[in-house]
Amino acid sequence: MPVLRVSRLTLFSPRRAAVAAAAVALVALTACSKGEAPAGAGGGAGGGAAPPPPEVGVVVATPTDVGLVTELPGRLEASRVAEVRARAAGILQARLFREGSDVKAGQPLFRIDPAPYAAAEQSAQASLARAEANAVQAKALAERYRPLVEANAVSKQDYASAVAAAKAADADVAVGRAAVQTARINLGYANVTAPISGRIGRALVTEGALVGQGDATQLAVIQQIDPLYVNFTQSATDALRLRRAMEAGQLKRASGSNAASVRIVMEDGSDYALPGKLLFSDLTVDSTTGQITLRAEVPNPNGVLLPGLYVRVKVEQAQATNAITVPQQAVTRTQQGDTLTVVAADGKLSKRTVKISAAQNNQWIVLDGLKAGEQVMVDGFQKLQMMPPGTPVKAVPWKAPAPEGSPAAAGAQAPAPAAAAKQ
Image (cartoon, rainbow, N blue to C red; front, side, top):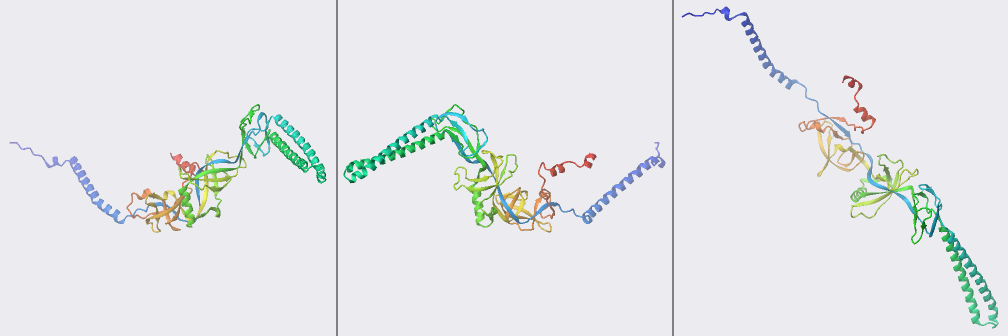
């Protein structure tokens, strides 16, 4: 049986030798990489630097006197309102003012036909003249009877009658004078004048209308708008809490007096330039809403404010002494209480229960539970969610974001020229 013999030169050809050498090199590299991996991992765990602590924004608690400003809805009202009515019956002859203008007290506004009242005055004058003549005659008769009755020339009865007639004549004179005065008053009502100074509205009747027949016809309305009243409501619970805080010494009255400062906020959000003062608060509570009514007086020399306008009222009723303010986002409010996070000097965090009073300009007023100089965490809560409990932090000063629409906010949103060029 023939046998096939293969020489060693055939099995170990140059091509196969190269393939075998490449395989050996690959195995060596794999072994080296597997051997170095644990060493590198061990060096990173043992000799590498620890990650830096996360940065959180903080504010330093600083005591100060803070005015407790409450913003409440209100409505403006004229300080004085007078309805101009016809007190004399007749035909309206003329309107003597310009609608919507300012008028002075006593200024003529309307004229009613005065002819009937002028005639009535003349008749009263004639009646008065007749009564005065009768009084002169009766008084003269009584004077003549006086010496005669002493001489028994006239009976005492006749003298007594003469004296009584003289006194009755004097009474008729008084009645006549009163009738003349009444006629003059009615004649004066024919000229309708302004009862107060203020701004008059539109005329409610026109020339030729019959007014004052039966009821006193309303002709126009005058409103005094400088100053104006602003009526607003406050929760009775808040008012009681404020009063108790004042009695406990936690708060004091604004400006040291009962006249609290009042500011008006217009519909567009702008503040009215002139401040007002609180006049009074109602003594009763509305049983349906639980609100009490307050009234303030606001100067309005230029007539910018108008009666009936709805506004927001900022009233400073009290001041918190040595109070600490913190941003609202730093406080967590729950049914169990209000808490915030304090950052110690070593970066440790601790929860703190505090007592807050009110909010002012996106700031909570802290009355108790926080000391001066302590650092309150405001920003960076999301960074700590991925960290284990007890992780120290690095406190950095927190800056409030700029309001939308302000130049600072616009500058922060606009890309830098270099960055825009790279894009």
